[in-house]
Amino acid sequence: MNARTIPIVAEGAVRQRKREAPKGRVVDPAAVEEVRALLGGASRARDLLIEHLHRLQDRFGHLSARHLAALAREMSLAQTEVYEVATFYHHFDVVKEGQAVPAALTVRVCDGLSCEMAGAQELLARLPAILGKEVRVIAAPCIGRCEQAPAVAVGQHPVANASCETVAAKVHTGTTTHQPEGFIDRAAYEAQGGYRLLKQCIGGELEVEPVIQTMEDSGLRGLGGAGFPAGRKWRIVRNEVAPRLMAVNIDEGEPGTFKDRVYLERDPHRFLEGMLIAAWAVGIARIYIYLRDEYHGCRTMLEAELAKLRAAPPYPGMPEIVLRRGAGAYICGEESAMIESIEGKRGMPRLRPPYVAQVGLFGRPTLEHNFETLYWVREILEQGGAWFTSHGRRGRKGLRSFSVSGRVKSPGVKLAPAGITVRELIDEYCGGMLDGHTLYAYLPGGASGGILPASLGDIPLDFDTLQPLRLLHRLGGGDRAVRQRHGGRCGAQHDALLRP
Image (cartoon, rainbow, N blue to C red; front, side):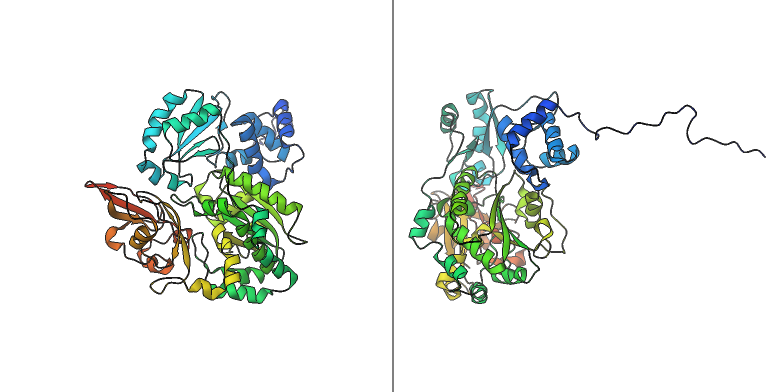
């Protein structure tokens, strides 16, 4: 039987030409030139993708498809890779072909719990008509200014206790940037003995082992959420193979949390000295600081103060300090998601093991800390571990920073002993509830941590006391939210936040 043979290649077929360019949008040469001019001599390294997206967003007010394709070409990345990162973060406005570009100025009205109670919806309803079509008014997740509720951001300028009139005034005067005032700069910090402890460490007056032991004796635990003992973490990472890196998380995205911002705006060098002492003790080669994008003023201030440190380092061989800018992603408060973002990727949490201390930033052992943990290092080493543990109530030890907002008479960051109850916190540190309001319920771990009724208002606020209630997801992050009853109605009273 004769079998029919079917040719693999049809007769007369022409071999397909090799694709001359990757799939995707055709790259506009003019867009490439615009991107090159904007980036200038900056590195095109893969981990700078988010930084370069910020440059485009800041310059053009949005991310056009043509600029994304040009950036991909310039950084030798796939267009899909650039697009998936740009669309992951809320602060990037990606505009495809044929879509309208957003207004030149955006006003963000925080609709977090405290701001919602303080009138955010009225602002969202009235501002569009007042400001006109040339201004985009949008609702935004918590912007970290709960004690100033309702809080609004006009461009990059925060407006505290906002009203339609105050927001309109900022828009009409073009006040769209922010520079914190009254903070302790480097000169003032050094005049108060700042960096003296760091120089003692570098000069050999203090040795690594006693320093780490003092940190362990203090019982200081991570103040970003997990509550892992800080001294033990130093010891673990120090024992890993060099080079070792450090990542500092100032993303602070949990609704109701603002303590890191307040401390940073007041005394940035206290944090920086603690950071450099930790780097010395652990043997860190490079430090990355990840700062929440909503904290525009803090970024401007921190860039200036870091420039002073680089120009005149407090000691020879100071590790390189890199400041990275978040882009609006709640998940980047988680340490491994933050590390992914620092590497220029989507902020997706990694599976563990391996742990960040072993395989972290760029695959290297990484010391990851929250801002406030490092803020306490200098004082603990100067005063001693026993000084820190001498504070506390009901058997708890240490001090905690509470971000308190809502219907209390004096909201703000309150430094109080560990183990204090929410009733004591409100009465002793916040001047009590507003007139006509009584405690109804509170959030002991931020918006993601659940709500406790007033009947549980006498539970000590600390790590281990709340774990049986499974509400300690963010206690280390300092989150406490309070609800109140007023006139027979339940009002969502907001956060009293703790940082153990």
